[in-house]
Image 1 (tube, rainbow, N blue to C red):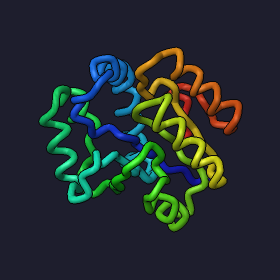
Image 2 (cartoon, helix red, strand yellow):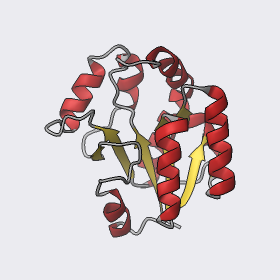
Image 3 (cartoon, rainbow, N blue to C red):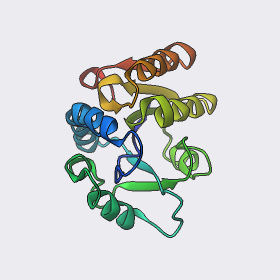
Length: 177
């Protein structure tokens, strides 16, 4: 089964409510995220960055990277920013599928399974997992490669993904790409 690694909303200037908590969560999971991205590149697994455009429809990959790196937590943005040539899709809402061309790209590449990493576990990761599931993609969520704001809600979201969406929820090291 062909997989794609989807990096969700990691270009963030962290200038919002709950940013301090989120940044600390990202710091904890960043090493696992980086290892997965590197593994995916090394193994030839497609890597797709899907990121909120924060309502700026003129902003592309370069502008979103520049804003995020210029924000409050460049130390968590720079190490996970997409390298040149990596697929990048802007989004406007919580789900990586809502109003984007992601499904088309995945079908064109014959991807059957998505591995979701990034932020926020109890929001964008959860909604994206549900949207992947209803589109008949298999879903994997490495629990140590997703960042949350509210730990108890993030844990509930992971359990929901595992139970209701049959998501493979394990650690990044055990995640098949």
